[in-house]
Image (cartoon, rainbow, N blue to C red; front, side, top):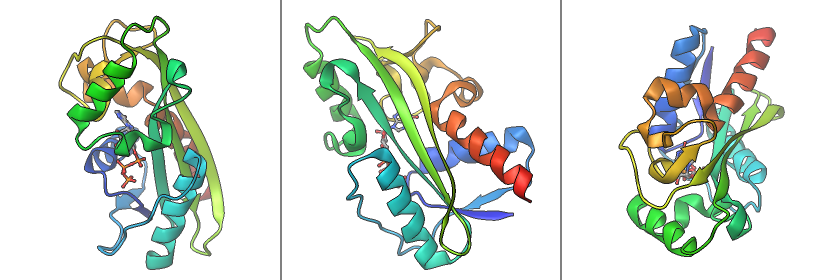
Length: 191
Ligand code: ITT
């Protein structure tokens, strides 16, 4: 079964394909048409996830799945949140901004969120799920794997940052993997 993955983030696409491959399931995620360029005007992860999945559906008229994700930091009232990809110009500057905003702050608790929306060929929401991965923000960067805020995110229950985990290890605990496993479990029972 082919599903259009409503994303232009190559890291997300790679992680999602790796998780599907590791589970040996008969689903193939393909890229959206080239003119896919949705405006993320929602105010929540869930809304933006729906906007992306529906925009991809309008172009492809088949099964589509979107991932809207980000880092939520307790002491910053959930920021950068839905603005995670837009918090500064480059990934390094985004990390720098977060570390600066947390200077002198004791409570560094944070979580990654991933809201996934699955749309069916008729254009209706078939299933949605929000996955979370808990952790905290350290004071410097550590590790080179993953992407985005991974080098400053210490995974709860581990001594390593998300960027120090191997791809497989990240894919076992990440917010994206929690959400995707629920979506795949649903799809498995459907086909
Ligand atoms: P698409 O909308 O095309 O899927 P995007 O990168 O713009 O790609 P989002 O709007 O969902 O996607 O923003 C996600 C941002 O949140 C991402 O760019 C990272 O900064 C951060 N993020 C999400 N998942 C992450 C992860 O697993 N590790 C580190 N940072 C992550």
